[in-house]
Length: 139
Length: 371
Image (tube, rainbow over the protein chains, first blue to last red):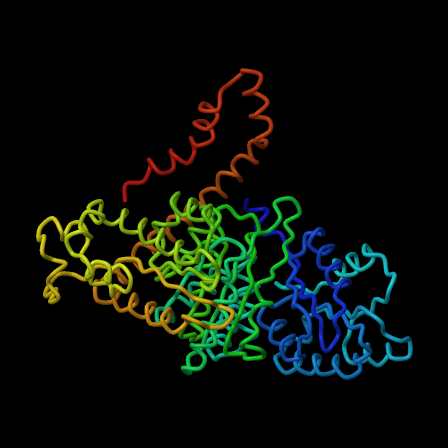
Protein backbone atom coordinates (compact mmCIF):
# COMPACT_ATOMS: atom_id res chain seq x y z
CA UNK A 1 0.00 0.00 0.00
CA UNK A 2 2.68 2.48 0.97
CA UNK A 3 4.74 1.67 -2.11
CA UNK A 4 1.75 2.17 -4.36
CA UNK A 5 0.61 5.45 -2.93
CA UNK A 6 4.05 6.99 -3.14
CA UNK A 7 4.44 5.94 -6.73
CA UNK A 8 4.24 8.86 -9.07
CA UNK A 9 1.03 9.18 -11.03
CA UNK A 10 1.19 11.36 -14.12
CA UNK A 11 -1.78 13.70 -14.47
CA UNK A 12 -2.82 14.96 -17.89
CA UNK A 13 -5.40 17.37 -19.20
CA UNK A 14 -6.55 16.61 -22.71
CA UNK A 15 -8.10 19.78 -24.05
CA UNK A 16 -10.14 20.69 -27.10
CA UNK A 17 -9.88 24.42 -27.72
CA UNK A 18 -11.98 26.60 -29.95
CA UNK A 19 -14.61 25.85 -32.54
CA UNK A 20 -13.43 22.42 -33.52
CA UNK A 21 -15.89 19.60 -33.29
CA UNK A 22 -13.60 16.69 -33.98
CA UNK A 23 -12.78 14.87 -30.79
CA UNK A 24 -12.14 11.31 -31.91
CA UNK A 25 -8.41 11.86 -31.62
CA UNK A 26 -8.77 13.37 -28.16
CA UNK A 27 -10.86 10.40 -27.04
CA UNK A 28 -8.36 7.90 -28.39
CA UNK A 29 -5.45 9.60 -26.69
CA UNK A 30 -7.38 9.96 -23.40
CA UNK A 31 -8.01 6.27 -23.40
CA UNK A 32 -4.47 5.34 -24.34
CA UNK A 33 -3.13 7.57 -21.57
CA UNK A 34 -5.50 6.03 -19.08
CA UNK A 35 -4.39 2.55 -20.08
CA UNK A 36 -0.80 3.68 -19.67
CA UNK A 37 -1.66 4.38 -16.02
CA UNK A 38 -2.05 8.15 -16.30
CA UNK A 39 -4.84 10.13 -14.72
CA UNK A 40 -6.61 11.89 -17.53
CA UNK A 41 -8.91 14.86 -17.27
CA UNK A 42 -10.82 15.45 -20.47
CA UNK A 43 -12.03 18.97 -21.08
CA UNK A 44 -14.91 18.27 -23.46
CA UNK A 45 -15.49 20.11 -26.73
CA UNK A 46 -15.42 23.82 -27.60
CA UNK A 47 -13.42 25.12 -24.66
CA UNK A 48 -12.19 28.68 -24.41
CA UNK A 49 -8.51 29.28 -23.63
CA UNK A 50 -9.58 30.65 -20.21
CA UNK A 51 -11.17 27.36 -19.31
CA UNK A 52 -8.08 25.43 -20.30
CA UNK A 53 -5.92 27.74 -18.21
CA UNK A 54 -8.25 27.43 -15.22
CA UNK A 55 -8.24 23.64 -15.47
CA UNK A 56 -4.47 23.36 -15.94
CA UNK A 57 -3.74 25.58 -12.94
CA UNK A 58 -6.31 24.08 -10.58
CA UNK A 59 -5.77 20.44 -11.46
CA UNK A 60 -1.99 20.92 -11.33
CA UNK A 61 -1.55 18.56 -14.26
CA UNK A 62 1.91 17.47 -15.31
CA UNK A 63 0.91 17.45 -18.94
CA UNK A 64 -1.41 19.63 -20.99
CA UNK A 65 -2.32 18.07 -24.32
CA UNK A 66 -4.07 20.46 -26.68
CA UNK A 67 -5.87 18.98 -29.64
CA UNK A 68 -6.57 21.37 -32.51
CA UNK A 69 -7.79 20.39 -35.93
CA UNK A 70 -9.41 23.66 -36.89
CA UNK A 71 -6.32 25.57 -37.98
CA UNK A 72 -6.74 28.20 -35.28
CA UNK A 73 -3.65 27.10 -33.37
CA UNK A 74 -1.76 30.34 -34.00
CA UNK A 75 -4.55 32.24 -32.26
CA UNK A 76 -5.48 29.85 -29.47
CA UNK A 77 -2.18 28.36 -28.32
CA UNK A 78 -0.52 31.73 -27.53
CA UNK A 79 -3.52 32.69 -25.38
CA UNK A 80 -3.22 29.49 -23.39
CA UNK A 81 0.53 29.88 -22.98
CA UNK A 82 0.15 33.48 -21.78
CA UNK A 83 -2.46 32.41 -19.22
CA UNK A 84 -0.25 29.64 -17.88
CA UNK A 85 2.56 32.14 -17.50
CA UNK A 86 0.28 34.53 -15.62
CA UNK A 87 -0.54 31.89 -13.01
CA UNK A 88 3.00 30.58 -12.78
CA UNK A 89 2.11 27.28 -14.37
CA UNK A 90 4.14 27.48 -17.57
CA UNK A 91 7.48 26.30 -16.25
CA UNK A 92 6.34 23.05 -14.73
CA UNK A 93 3.69 21.95 -17.19
CA UNK A 94 4.62 19.87 -20.21
CA UNK A 95 2.61 21.26 -23.11
CA UNK A 96 2.06 19.08 -26.16
CA UNK A 97 -0.04 19.89 -29.19
CA UNK A 98 -1.73 17.35 -31.40
CA UNK A 99 -3.68 17.71 -34.60
CA UNK A 100 -3.20 19.36 -37.96
CA UNK A 101 -0.33 21.80 -37.53
CA UNK A 102 1.39 22.82 -40.78
CA UNK A 103 5.18 22.46 -40.80
CA UNK A 104 5.75 26.20 -41.15
CA UNK A 105 3.74 26.97 -38.00
CA UNK A 106 5.65 24.57 -35.79
CA UNK A 107 8.75 26.63 -34.98
CA UNK A 108 6.55 29.51 -33.84
CA UNK A 109 4.58 27.32 -31.42
CA UNK A 110 7.71 25.67 -30.07
CA UNK A 111 9.18 29.09 -29.47
CA UNK A 112 6.18 30.03 -27.33
CA UNK A 113 6.93 27.18 -25.00
CA UNK A 114 5.13 24.22 -26.56
CA UNK A 115 7.29 21.19 -25.77
CA UNK A 116 6.29 18.91 -28.63
CA UNK A 117 3.90 18.66 -31.57
CA UNK A 118 2.46 15.36 -32.69
CA UNK A 119 0.87 15.20 -36.11
CA UNK A 120 -1.51 12.62 -37.57
CA UNK A 121 -0.16 9.10 -37.67
CA UNK A 122 2.13 9.44 -34.67
CA UNK A 123 2.30 6.04 -32.98
CA UNK A 124 0.52 6.18 -29.61
CA UNK A 125 3.49 4.63 -27.85
CA UNK A 126 5.75 7.42 -29.06
CA UNK A 127 3.52 10.02 -27.39
CA UNK A 128 3.24 8.00 -24.18
CA UNK A 129 7.01 7.51 -24.02
CA UNK A 130 7.58 11.20 -24.61
CA UNK A 131 5.25 12.07 -21.72
CA UNK A 132 6.84 9.53 -19.41
CA UNK A 133 10.33 10.81 -20.15
CA UNK A 134 9.54 14.50 -20.04
CA UNK A 135 6.84 14.89 -17.40
CA UNK A 136 8.17 17.58 -15.06
CA UNK A 137 9.07 16.88 -11.46
CA UNK A 138 6.36 17.46 -8.90
CA UNK A 139 8.41 17.09 -5.76
CA UNK B 1 12.55 18.78 0.14
CA UNK B 2 13.26 21.03 3.06
CA UNK B 3 10.94 22.34 5.68
CA UNK B 4 11.38 25.84 4.30
CA UNK B 5 9.91 24.91 0.93
CA UNK B 6 6.76 23.59 2.62
CA UNK B 7 6.39 26.70 4.75
CA UNK B 8 6.80 28.85 1.67
CA UNK B 9 4.09 26.88 -0.11
CA UNK B 10 1.75 27.21 2.86
CA UNK B 11 2.44 30.93 3.02
CA UNK B 12 1.67 31.41 -0.65
CA UNK B 13 -1.50 29.33 -0.26
CA UNK B 14 -2.66 31.47 2.65
CA UNK B 15 -1.88 34.52 0.53
CA UNK B 16 -4.44 33.30 -1.96
CA UNK B 17 -2.16 32.02 -4.72
CA UNK B 18 -4.11 29.52 -6.81
CA UNK B 19 -1.06 27.69 -8.02
CA UNK B 20 0.12 27.10 -4.44
CA UNK B 21 -3.26 25.66 -3.50
CA UNK B 22 -3.12 23.36 -6.52
CA UNK B 23 0.38 22.22 -5.67
CA UNK B 24 -0.49 21.63 -2.01
CA UNK B 25 -3.33 19.34 -3.07
CA UNK B 26 -0.99 17.51 -5.44
CA UNK B 27 1.39 16.86 -2.57
CA UNK B 28 -1.45 15.71 -0.34
CA UNK B 29 -2.80 13.44 -3.04
CA UNK B 30 0.51 11.81 -3.87
CA UNK B 31 1.59 11.77 -0.21
CA UNK B 32 4.89 13.20 -1.31
CA UNK B 33 7.53 13.86 1.35
CA UNK B 34 6.63 16.86 3.44
CA UNK B 35 2.91 16.74 2.83
CA UNK B 36 2.30 16.11 6.51
CA UNK B 37 4.09 19.30 7.46
CA UNK B 38 1.86 21.16 5.04
CA UNK B 39 -1.34 19.73 6.47
CA UNK B 40 -0.10 20.35 10.01
CA UNK B 41 0.55 24.00 9.22
CA UNK B 42 -2.78 24.41 7.45
CA UNK B 43 -4.78 22.88 10.25
CA UNK B 44 -4.79 26.01 12.42
CA UNK B 45 -6.33 28.00 9.57
CA UNK B 46 -9.30 25.72 8.99
CA UNK B 47 -12.84 25.58 10.31
CA UNK B 48 -14.57 28.43 8.52
CA UNK B 49 -15.94 26.67 5.46
CA UNK B 50 -19.20 24.78 5.26
CA UNK B 51 -18.64 21.39 3.69
CA UNK B 52 -21.27 19.52 1.71
CA UNK B 53 -20.82 16.00 0.34
CA UNK B 54 -22.79 14.85 -2.70
CA UNK B 55 -23.02 11.21 -3.64
CA UNK B 56 -25.14 9.11 -5.97
CA UNK B 57 -24.91 6.56 -8.72
CA UNK B 58 -23.18 7.37 -12.03
CA UNK B 59 -25.35 9.50 -14.29
CA UNK B 60 -27.61 10.75 -11.51
CA UNK B 61 -26.51 14.29 -12.31
CA UNK B 62 -24.07 15.02 -9.50
CA UNK B 63 -21.64 17.11 -11.53
CA UNK B 64 -24.40 19.15 -13.14
CA UNK B 65 -25.95 19.82 -9.74
CA UNK B 66 -22.58 20.77 -8.27
CA UNK B 67 -22.10 23.18 -11.15
CA UNK B 68 -25.43 24.87 -10.44
CA UNK B 69 -24.77 24.99 -6.69
CA UNK B 70 -21.37 26.57 -7.31
CA UNK B 71 -23.00 29.13 -9.60
CA UNK B 72 -25.59 29.97 -6.94
CA UNK B 73 -22.97 30.53 -4.26
CA UNK B 74 -20.84 32.58 -6.63
CA UNK B 75 -23.84 34.81 -7.38
CA UNK B 76 -24.10 35.37 -3.62
CA UNK B 77 -20.51 36.53 -3.63
CA UNK B 78 -19.13 33.43 -1.94
CA UNK B 79 -16.10 31.46 -3.07
CA UNK B 80 -16.36 27.76 -3.81
CA UNK B 81 -14.06 24.76 -3.76
CA UNK B 82 -15.05 21.46 -5.36
CA UNK B 83 -13.37 18.09 -5.00
CA UNK B 84 -14.64 15.48 -7.42
CA UNK B 85 -13.58 11.91 -6.74
CA UNK B 86 -13.66 9.39 -9.58
CA UNK B 87 -12.75 5.72 -9.61
CA UNK B 88 -9.44 4.59 -11.07
CA UNK B 89 -8.64 1.37 -12.87
CA UNK B 90 -7.59 -1.37 -10.48
CA UNK B 91 -5.35 -2.77 -13.22
CA UNK B 92 -3.36 0.14 -14.58
CA UNK B 93 -4.10 2.75 -11.94
CA UNK B 94 -5.13 5.03 -14.79
CA UNK B 95 -8.31 7.04 -14.72
CA UNK B 96 -10.41 9.37 -16.80
CA UNK B 97 -11.71 12.14 -14.59
CA UNK B 98 -14.69 13.55 -16.41
CA UNK B 99 -16.62 15.65 -13.90
CA UNK B 100 -15.01 18.85 -15.02
CA UNK B 101 -16.88 18.74 -18.31
CA UNK B 102 -20.12 19.66 -16.53
CA UNK B 103 -18.77 22.79 -14.87
CA UNK B 104 -20.15 24.93 -17.67
CA UNK B 105 -21.63 27.72 -15.53
CA UNK B 106 -18.34 28.68 -13.97
CA UNK B 107 -16.13 28.99 -17.01
CA UNK B 108 -12.82 30.67 -16.35
CA UNK B 109 -13.94 31.74 -12.85
CA UNK B 110 -10.88 31.18 -10.70
CA UNK B 111 -12.92 31.61 -7.53
CA UNK B 112 -14.49 28.25 -8.23
CA UNK B 113 -11.60 25.95 -7.52
CA UNK B 114 -12.44 22.59 -9.04
CA UNK B 115 -10.15 19.66 -8.42
CA UNK B 116 -10.50 16.09 -9.69
CA UNK B 117 -9.10 13.29 -7.58
CA UNK B 118 -8.93 9.58 -8.31
CA UNK B 119 -9.06 6.73 -5.87
CA UNK B 120 -5.51 5.61 -6.78
CA UNK B 121 -6.21 2.29 -5.14
CA UNK B 122 -5.45 3.59 -1.68
CA UNK B 123 -7.02 1.51 1.02
CA UNK B 124 -8.80 3.98 3.22
CA UNK B 125 -6.23 6.55 2.19
CA UNK B 126 -8.70 8.24 -0.08
CA UNK B 127 -10.76 9.62 2.77
CA UNK B 128 -7.60 10.92 4.42
CA UNK B 129 -6.49 12.57 1.19
CA UNK B 130 -9.93 14.08 0.65
CA UNK B 131 -10.14 15.39 4.20
CA UNK B 132 -6.69 16.94 3.85
CA UNK B 133 -7.58 18.51 0.49
CA UNK B 134 -10.69 19.97 2.11
CA UNK B 135 -8.45 21.48 4.78
CA UNK B 136 -6.32 23.08 2.08
CA UNK B 137 -9.41 24.63 0.45
CA UNK B 138 -10.71 25.73 3.84
CA UNK B 139 -7.42 27.35 4.83
CA UNK B 140 -7.28 29.03 1.42
CA UNK B 141 -10.48 30.77 2.45
CA UNK B 142 -13.17 29.05 0.41
CA UNK B 143 -16.61 29.74 1.92
CA UNK B 144 -18.27 26.66 0.48
CA UNK B 145 -16.68 23.31 -0.20
CA UNK B 146 -18.40 20.54 -2.10
CA UNK B 147 -17.16 16.96 -2.22
CA UNK B 148 -18.56 14.93 -5.07
CA UNK B 149 -18.23 11.16 -5.30
CA UNK B 150 -19.80 8.10 -6.87
CA UNK B 151 -21.55 6.36 -4.03
CA UNK B 152 -20.63 2.80 -4.78
CA UNK B 153 -18.81 1.39 -1.79
CA UNK B 154 -17.47 1.86 1.68
CA UNK B 155 -14.56 3.88 0.40
CA UNK B 156 -16.84 6.50 -1.09
CA UNK B 157 -19.08 6.54 1.94
CA UNK B 158 -16.02 7.30 4.07
CA UNK B 159 -15.10 10.11 1.70
CA UNK B 160 -18.48 11.74 1.81
CA UNK B 161 -18.56 11.46 5.59
CA UNK B 162 -15.82 14.08 5.77
CA UNK B 163 -18.60 16.56 4.98
CA UNK B 164 -20.91 18.23 7.50
CA UNK B 165 -23.97 17.67 5.35
CA UNK B 166 -24.44 14.70 3.04
CA UNK B 167 -26.70 14.87 0.01
CA UNK B 168 -27.67 11.64 -1.72
CA UNK B 169 -28.73 12.05 -5.32
CA UNK B 170 -31.25 9.61 -6.79
CA UNK B 171 -32.58 9.17 -10.30
CA UNK B 172 -36.31 8.76 -10.83
CA UNK B 173 -37.62 5.33 -11.61
CA UNK B 174 -34.43 3.68 -10.45
CA UNK B 175 -35.85 0.88 -8.36
CA UNK B 176 -32.42 -0.66 -8.15
CA UNK B 177 -30.92 2.48 -6.75
CA UNK B 178 -33.48 2.63 -4.03
CA UNK B 179 -32.63 -0.97 -3.25
CA UNK B 180 -29.01 0.04 -2.98
CA UNK B 181 -29.96 2.90 -0.70
CA UNK B 182 -31.65 0.51 1.64
CA UNK B 183 -28.40 -1.37 1.99
CA UNK B 184 -26.45 1.45 3.53
CA UNK B 185 -26.41 4.86 1.95
CA UNK B 186 -29.76 5.67 3.50
CA UNK B 187 -28.09 6.11 6.87
CA UNK B 188 -25.61 8.70 5.70
CA UNK B 189 -28.00 11.01 3.82
CA UNK B 190 -29.12 14.20 5.55
CA UNK B 191 -30.85 15.19 2.37
CA UNK B 192 -32.16 13.18 -0.54
CA UNK B 193 -32.48 14.82 -3.90
CA UNK B 194 -34.47 13.24 -6.68
CA UNK B 195 -32.80 14.81 -9.68
CA UNK B 196 -34.25 14.84 -13.20
CA UNK B 197 -37.58 15.41 -11.47
CA UNK B 198 -39.18 16.15 -14.84
CA UNK B 199 -38.79 12.50 -15.76
CA UNK B 200 -41.47 9.92 -15.42
CA UNK B 201 -41.53 8.14 -12.08
CA UNK B 202 -40.04 11.01 -10.09
CA UNK B 203 -42.92 11.38 -7.67
CA UNK B 204 -42.96 7.67 -7.07
CA UNK B 205 -39.25 7.69 -6.22
CA UNK B 206 -39.87 10.60 -3.85
CA UNK B 207 -42.63 8.66 -2.14
CA UNK B 208 -40.47 5.56 -1.81
CA UNK B 209 -37.65 7.54 -0.27
CA UNK B 210 -39.96 9.26 2.17
CA UNK B 211 -41.41 5.97 3.22
CA UNK B 212 -37.97 4.54 3.88
CA UNK B 213 -36.82 7.58 5.82
CA UNK B 214 -39.81 7.41 8.09
CA UNK B 215 -39.51 3.70 8.57
CA UNK B 216 -35.95 4.28 9.62
CA UNK B 217 -36.79 7.12 11.95
CA UNK B 218 -39.78 5.79 13.71
CA UNK B 219 -41.31 2.38 13.32
CA UNK B 220 -44.62 3.91 14.38
CA UNK B 221 -44.57 6.63 11.77
CA UNK B 222 -46.87 4.73 9.49
CA UNK B 223 -49.41 4.33 12.24
CA UNK B 224 -49.11 7.97 13.27
CA UNK B 225 -50.07 9.34 9.89
CA UNK B 226 -53.60 8.17 10.55
CA UNK B 227 -53.87 10.35 13.64
CA UNK B 228 -52.20 13.46 12.46
CA UNK B 229 -53.74 13.50 9.03
CA UNK B 230 -52.88 16.49 6.87
CA UNK B 231 -50.36 17.89 9.29
CA UNK B 232 -48.21 14.78 9.31
CA UNK B 233 -48.39 14.70 5.55
CA UNK B 234 -47.23 18.28 5.37
CA UNK B 235 -44.40 17.49 7.71
CA UNK B 236 -43.22 14.65 5.53
CA UNK B 237 -43.18 16.88 2.50
CA UNK B 238 -41.65 20.10 3.73
CA UNK B 239 -40.53 19.50 7.30
CA UNK B 240 -38.09 21.98 8.76
CA UNK B 241 -36.07 19.77 11.02
CA UNK B 242 -38.32 20.27 14.02
CA UNK B 243 -40.02 16.95 13.41
CA UNK B 244 -40.02 14.86 16.57
CA UNK B 245 -38.25 11.49 16.44
CA UNK B 246 -39.06 8.19 18.07
CA UNK B 247 -37.60 8.97 21.50
CA UNK B 248 -39.55 12.20 21.74
CA UNK B 249 -42.71 10.47 20.74
CA UNK B 250 -42.26 7.94 23.52
CA UNK B 251 -41.97 10.50 26.27
CA UNK B 252 -44.47 12.93 24.86
CA UNK B 253 -47.04 11.62 22.46
CA UNK B 254 -48.26 15.10 21.67
CA UNK B 255 -44.83 16.30 20.65
CA UNK B 256 -45.76 16.52 17.02
CA UNK B 257 -48.83 18.57 17.76
CA UNK B 258 -46.95 21.09 19.82
CA UNK B 259 -45.51 23.79 17.57
CA UNK B 260 -43.46 25.38 20.36
CA UNK B 261 -40.74 22.79 20.76
CA UNK B 262 -39.38 24.89 23.59
CA UNK B 263 -36.25 23.59 25.25
CA UNK B 264 -36.17 20.27 23.41
CA UNK B 265 -33.02 19.81 21.36
CA UNK B 266 -33.76 20.15 17.65
CA UNK B 267 -34.03 16.97 15.65
CA UNK B 268 -33.28 16.58 11.97
CA UNK B 269 -35.43 14.44 9.74
CA UNK B 270 -33.84 13.80 6.34
CA UNK B 271 -35.57 15.80 3.65
CA UNK B 272 -36.53 14.67 0.18
CA UNK B 273 -36.26 17.35 -2.50
CA UNK B 274 -36.78 17.42 -6.26
CA UNK B 275 -34.47 19.15 -8.71
CA UNK B 276 -33.85 19.42 -12.41
CA UNK B 277 -30.16 20.21 -12.39
CA UNK B 278 -29.91 20.96 -16.10
CA UNK B 279 -32.39 23.84 -15.84
CA UNK B 280 -31.58 24.83 -12.27
CA UNK B 281 -35.07 24.03 -11.03
CA UNK B 282 -35.20 23.38 -7.30
CA UNK B 283 -31.70 24.70 -6.65
CA UNK B 284 -33.00 27.51 -4.41
CA UNK B 285 -34.89 25.03 -2.23
CA UNK B 286 -31.82 22.83 -2.10
CA UNK B 287 -29.64 25.70 -0.94
CA UNK B 288 -32.21 26.70 1.68
CA UNK B 289 -32.44 23.18 3.00
CA UNK B 290 -28.66 22.89 3.11
CA UNK B 291 -28.60 26.07 5.18
CA UNK B 292 -31.38 24.71 7.41
CA UNK B 293 -29.31 21.63 8.05
CA UNK B 294 -26.27 23.74 8.80
CA UNK B 295 -28.32 25.77 11.31
CA UNK B 296 -29.57 22.59 12.87
CA UNK B 297 -26.00 21.28 13.20
CA UNK B 298 -25.02 24.50 14.91
CA UNK B 299 -28.01 24.66 17.23
CA UNK B 300 -27.90 21.03 18.29
CA UNK B 301 -24.18 21.01 18.91
CA UNK B 302 -23.82 18.24 16.39
CA UNK B 303 -21.39 20.27 14.31
CA UNK B 304 -18.88 20.24 17.13
CA UNK B 305 -19.62 16.60 17.83
CA UNK B 306 -19.03 15.73 14.17
CA UNK B 307 -15.75 17.61 14.15
CA UNK B 308 -14.60 15.68 17.20
CA UNK B 309 -15.60 12.35 15.70
CA UNK B 310 -13.89 13.21 12.45
CA UNK B 311 -10.69 14.21 14.19
CA UNK B 312 -10.73 10.95 16.12
CA UNK B 313 -11.24 8.99 12.94
CA UNK B 314 -8.42 10.88 11.23
CA UNK B 315 -6.04 10.06 14.05
CA UNK B 316 -7.00 6.41 13.93
CA UNK B 317 -6.67 6.26 10.15
CA UNK B 318 -3.24 7.87 10.22
CA UNK B 319 -2.03 5.55 12.96
CA UNK B 320 -3.34 2.53 11.08
CA UNK B 321 -1.48 3.42 7.92
CA UNK B 322 1.69 4.33 9.82
CA UNK B 323 1.69 1.14 11.85
CA UNK B 324 0.97 -0.75 8.67
CA UNK B 325 4.07 0.78 7.13
CA UNK B 326 6.17 -0.20 10.15
CA UNK B 327 4.89 -3.76 9.91
CA UNK B 328 5.61 -3.95 6.18
CA UNK B 329 9.15 -2.79 6.84
CA UNK B 330 9.53 -5.37 9.58
CA UNK B 331 8.21 -8.06 7.24
CA UNK B 332 10.73 -7.05 4.59
CA UNK B 333 13.51 -7.10 7.13
CA UNK B 334 12.63 -10.70 7.89
CA UNK B 335 12.79 -11.76 4.29
CA UNK B 336 9.40 -10.72 3.00
CA UNK B 337 5.94 -12.14 3.28
CA UNK B 338 6.48 -14.72 0.53
CA UNK B 339 8.90 -16.81 2.59
CA UNK B 340 6.44 -16.89 5.49
CA UNK B 341 3.60 -17.73 3.12
CA UNK B 342 5.57 -20.62 1.70
CA UNK B 343 6.24 -21.93 5.21
CA UNK B 344 2.55 -21.67 6.05
CA UNK B 345 1.55 -23.58 2.92
CA UNK B 346 4.16 -26.24 3.72
CA UNK B 347 2.56 -26.56 7.17
CA UNK B 348 5.82 -25.66 8.86
CA UNK B 349 4.02 -22.90 10.68
CA UNK B 350 0.64 -21.17 10.66
CA UNK B 351 -0.49 -17.58 10.02
CA UNK B 352 -1.21 -16.86 13.69
CA UNK B 353 2.25 -17.98 14.77
CA UNK B 354 3.86 -15.84 12.08
CA UNK B 355 1.83 -12.79 13.07
CA UNK B 356 2.73 -13.34 16.71
CA UNK B 357 6.38 -13.68 15.78
CA UNK B 358 6.55 -10.55 13.62
CA UNK B 359 4.69 -8.53 16.21
CA UNK B 360 6.92 -9.64 19.08
CA UNK B 361 9.46 -6.78 18.98
CA UNK B 362 6.66 -4.17 18.81
CA UNK B 363 4.95 -5.68 21.80
CA UNK B 364 8.15 -5.86 23.79
CA UNK B 365 8.84 -2.27 22.97
CA UNK B 366 5.44 -1.13 24.22
CA UNK B 367 5.46 -3.35 27.30
CA UNK B 368 8.72 -1.78 28.40
CA UNK B 369 7.08 1.64 28.64
CA UNK B 370 5.55 2.82 31.85
CA UNK B 371 4.77 6.42 30.96
